[in-house]
Amino acid sequence: MARLFNDEKLIVASHNKGKLVEIADLLTRFDVETIGADELGLPEPEETGETFIANAELKALASATTAGLPALADDSGLAVDALDGAPGIYSARWAQTANGRDFDFAMHKVEMALNRKPDALRTARFICALSLAWPDGHVESFEGKVDGTLVWPMRGKNGFGYDPVFLPEGGDLTFGEMQPAAKHAMSHRADAFEQLVGGCFADRIK
Image (cartoon, rainbow, N blue to C red; front, side, top):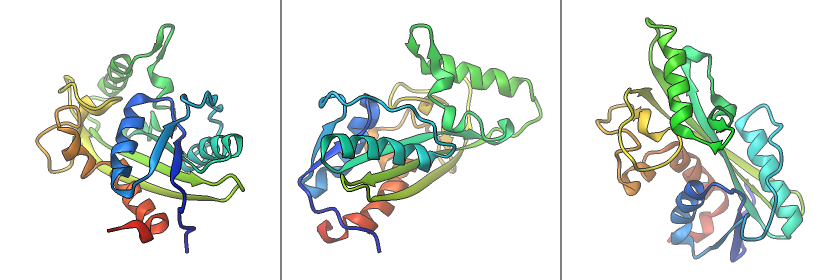
């Protein structure tokens, strides 16, 4: 049985403003005060894990043990079947440029890679690992996903990351075209979050 979360404050161990907003929105119903890692001046640890869960645990534990508060970390990315699962855990690195992260650049990079395989399927999935860590080193981790296909050109200005090229299975709108509430109801992060809620926030469900 997963450890229950019984605190009033929770660090969101991310410096990504899009993720901070999504996670804070998902937590509003539990009367939890969320604090971004950047607000506390916590550094971003190097992501040396080989899986989404390993990287999420690494980030959550770094914040929890440094700040002395429970911390929730997310590691997520886009896995494209025709690219053997790339960019995968390196999704953010694919967006890295000399001037910082640029996901328009990353989406073009994915499209260029797919163009070199004209007969390949465009199936892909978003994967999200969520890890909740406590200052004593205990950690609970959950992984969610959502399947879909990649579209081109990019569609929509909502969301963040690779959202404008991802069309969820059975849908008509990309994540970039969806309103936040619609995306939150079906996303990879929502899938992982519902598992987290069932495991660690069960006594707070109203």
